[in-house]
Amino acid sequence: MSIIVSKLPSLSISQMLLVILIFLGSIRLVYPSIDLNPFDRIDVLTLLKPVYDTNDPNCQSPNPPGVHPVYNIDINLLQFAQNIEHLEADFFLWGALGFGLDEVAPELTLGGPPPIGVRKANLNNLTENIIKEFAYEEIGHLRIIKKTVGGLPRPLMDLSPNFFAKIVNKAFERDLEPPFDPYRDNLSYMLASYIIPYLGLNGYVGANSQIKGYASRRLLAGLLGVESGQDAVIRTYLYERQRNRVQPYNFTVAEFTNRISTLRNNLGKCGVKDEGIVVPPELGAEGNSSTNILSANADSISYARSPEEILRILYDTGDERVPGGFYPKGGNGQIARSYL
Image (cartoon, rainbow, N blue to C red; front, side, top):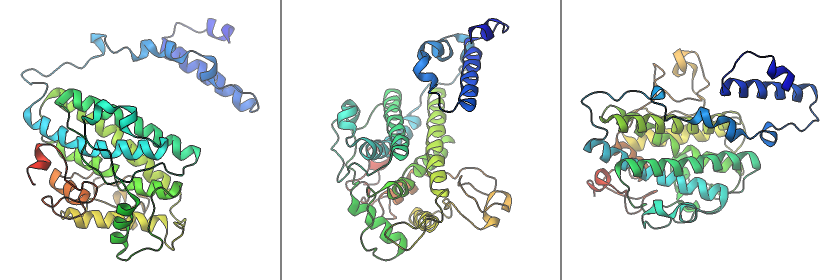
């Protein structure tokens, strides 16, 4: 390897790292039995440190002239988002690790009450690793939002099997037996996860046109990117299993997503802004795809929702003035409290 590297022209650190990883990957293909995990052999953090160093002014986008970092409207909208970020953080932390924000980052709760009924899910390694990554990402989201616009106490949240069963019963317009349990197995947990992050994505798209500050807009763009990625992972996971029966019931994964999406549209009361993972081709991308891993409009643009729509859905009441659902006592922040 040293001979190969010595004969290469001058490369940057990041380019050199890429060469090393490609070389190791090639050996793995030829000799699959050899344990060549590059992260066991290379001090990757040392190699990547120059790549992650963003203090160089040449690597910074200039701030627009005459624009403040944060405006009051930004504070209200990004503080509102903390309600969903808290919901995701504790749901994912408990699902993957068996404990929540109170143990991992108690300072971010700001004294808010622990969630109701949440617990560790019965997950295999693949699913648990996905959810664990999501969980730690949500901690980062909460930290940077609170640092940028100020924090809100965690609201009281209901993440119990009883409430998830209520949502699913409403979606199927009948009581399922036995009641749906989000913590039962991998598929049940990922179906439950289908219910939450997508609304965060909608909310950030909706807030984009109102956010004014350059720091706020940069934050919102970064949050939207990761929330969109999480939703895409969940939808892809479910799409791969679209024809699977959801045990112990007699309906498929695809039907479950369609039912939940229809329910959210009905609760939101602002038309179709939600679609399942399989749609008629005429409703898919350019009218030519029944695969619907990314939910989007006729121009393949993500749907936007207002805070009022999001509250109607997450309260499970269809009314932003009537709390319930995931937030038995309502959400926190100026926007949510203004309706109570």
